[in-house]
Image 1 (cartoon, rainbow, N blue to C red):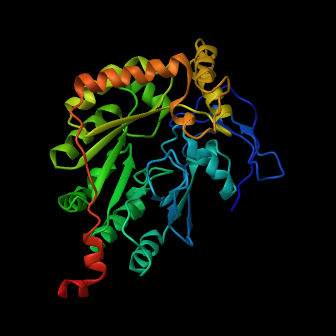
Image 2: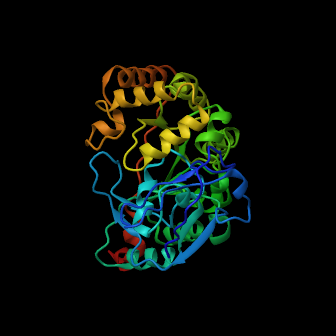
Length: 358
C-alpha cells in the first residue's frame, strides 16, 4: 500500500495543497522525503487525490489524553484533503505507511465498513451511552465524503439508536445532512463544533487550502444555529504572528452568529509538523518566518513542539497570556454562552425496549 517517490528540489507552491514536501516516514527504513517541481503537478499527476478503501477492524477509539475533552472518538477517514498545514493528525499517517506531508492530503484512506462497525458496537450489551466525537483526528466532511457518504451513514446509525454524537468540521458539506442532524438535535443527541481561526480568507487559503471559505463557514454556523443546533466555534490554532490579532473581531463575529461556546488552543508543532510548517512559512511568509517561529517557541519553553499535558494546548509565557486574556475579554464582552448537555437516557430505552414494561 505504501507509495515511495523522489523528486527534484523546488521552491514551488502547489495550488490546492498545504504541503510541498514529504518528510520521511519514521517507520520506514528508506528515505521517502521529497520535493517536487511545480510543473510536474497537475490534476493527472500522482498528487491528484487517491482513495484507498479499507475494512477497519474497529471504529471507536478510547481517548486517553487528559487535556482532550472527549471520552471516545471515531474517524471514518485517515488523511485529510483539506491540507491544513498545522494539523496534528498528519503524524498519524505514518502508521499507514505514508508521509505526513503531501501524502497526508493526497492519499485518503476510507474505512468503508465504519457504519457497520458502529452499529455492531452499539448493539453490544457492554456498551454504555457516552458521546462519541466524530473527527477527533481528520475531518469527517472532507471532500471524499461527497462520494462515500460514510458520515451520513454514521448519523443514521446514531439516530436509530438515539445515541449521542459530536461532530467537528470546517466544511459546509455538513449541511447536506441537516435533516438527520435536526432530528438528533430535537432530543439533545448532537452538538457541532465548527473550526474557524481567522476572518481573513486569503490567510485561510494558505493555511487550509481545500477547506470551506470563511464566508461559507460563517453562513454554515448561522444556518446550524437557526435550526436549533448547539454550535461551538473552535478558534484553533492561534498562531502568533499570523492570526492572533484577529481574536477580538473573530469572537465578536462568532458571538453575533449565536454560537453557544468558543474554544481556543495555541499552535504546537509536534513530530513532522515542525518541518512542514517551517517549510510552508518560508514559502508563503518569508519576511516574517523567523518572527513567527520565535513566537511559537516562546509558547513552548523555547521549542516548536510540546508534549506536556495541560501546557501543550495553552502554552506558556507572555504571548500565551496575552492570547488567553484577549479571548477572556472578548468572550466577556460579546459572548452569551449557553450550556448543552447530551441526553444519555434514550439509547438505553432503544437498546433495551423491555425496560418500557417497568
